Length: 339
Image (cartoon, rainbow, N blue to C red; front, side, top):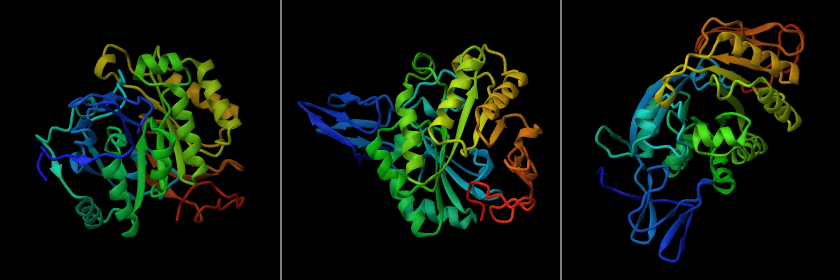
């Protein structure tokens, strides 16, 4: 494969002399030679192609806690990959140097799906994480890789903003084992201003993932002046509880200045703690903090007896007292995949 190679994309249709991408809610209508909002899907010769297939801009071995996933194979290593591009335009993006540029191949590592899986196994990773930018934009490569990875005994992890249409998400869910979805906020107007997206498709994606039986965790980044309104956070938490997500771990993450919000201050610790208290009072059983190493809310506690079960320091597991997925004190079943 060369940097000029294109692979056929899925989820599109012809409309007159244009093609309509059906992968995500943007539904880009592309004339010949046009590229979608994601910068990776392009109209070439009356069909939709992807420029992101096998064109990796990032490869790392991470602790699974970094995704963050706290209730899925804790203490293991995951093989993390990404291509350039993203279908959101987040003002606060911490990976904007790769997410807001096309996969031009200048600094790419070219790997087939089989080569990627072999590399993950060679590094003794137990999973592959599709992450860093938004893997929705390298959908076809992720899907092909996930199928091979599953046959090779590796788990597949989706780390995404969840801005994807239901039908392609259901196809993907057949080979995904765990997901962390970034729920930006609980206000559609802020979603549009902050991310150039909308709230409803993300809520639908959360429901689809949960219904598919995939282990799910949710991240909410608290951005000062944007997503730190406590009434909005309470509304979000109540929606999650009312829709069956009370056992789903929720990570409230601290913002640090980046990209087009570089002028803001870091999120006050008090704002994160207030959000966590609100979430617990709303009925969420497993509430965590992110980007706050050493905080007491990095620990997993039994929701029944409050026993410390898993102790972490940042993204590193220090102690694990679970008996598979059972509290050793009160024998309460802890939701997650811990074996």
